[in-house]
Image (cartoon, rainbow, N blue to C red; front, top):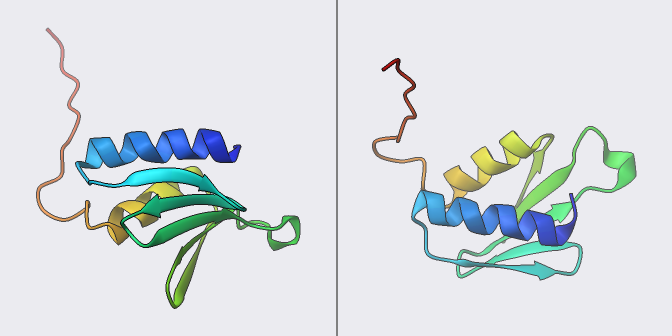
Length: 91
């Protein structure tokens, strides 16, 4: 996933989570402006880690896109409160 693709995905996630913030491409990854978070791609020798979520004094590894989204959702506090659930039902 390229940094622009990751930026677009995370911008959509912030809207879905109703979290104010802006996502911008930065050197080595993307920055969630106003939230104090940065996502950088892991080096090839760090497999199975694919991304790092960074905040001042802390660095969390993520091995999948779902893990990355879950980690960011928790970091911005969007996982708190009542979760929205998609329900599929017959007509």
